[in-house]
Length: 249
Image 1 (cartoon, rainbow, N blue to C red):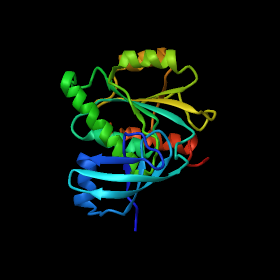
Image 2: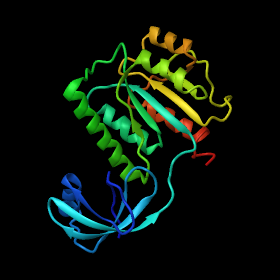
Image 3: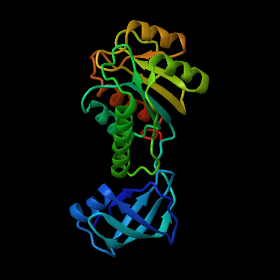
Image 4: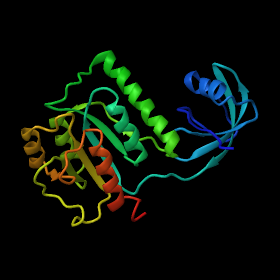
């Protein structure tokens, strides 16, 4: 029988007693229908995972005891940072979920010239909490022990400037249809990559020019135009194959 693997943001240590509440407790009690004595796996996003046994199970609170620690992570040797224009509906959730499964290290939502979604104040706070939960669920499913970092939204100009100042040795790529000045087949092996992907409608010519001035290379994924939720998944897959832990892991 498969042992459920769940996230907890609390400090975990062998022999400690802890509680799972709210949605996680509901999931264990009502969906999995687990009883006391059953084993679970826990991770807190900082590395490794913990074996535990359920002590008490109720609708609102589940108590567990940590019984062991399992070292090891499933992180790619490629540190990838995806910066993507905020999109409408559930497209952003899809990108966050699949990028996490593909091993992305960090994600920054971008406010670009063609971004139609406006976030601020309480709405931004709730959206950030929602996005964090999407990433957590994807880590639970994909067996990752370390959570990708979700940064607060930045404007396009602020992000590309920070990329120059803080990521000197990273390979900087911007997805844009048309002519390309980057070939991953000809590029040397990289350990850090920053990937820019536009919202619906893509980046403006001004933004592409600005990124080029900051050292970003234009990358085109074939002759077809990909949707904003498809492009980052395709690009991250290629990067993992060539620079990550798929083909060379």
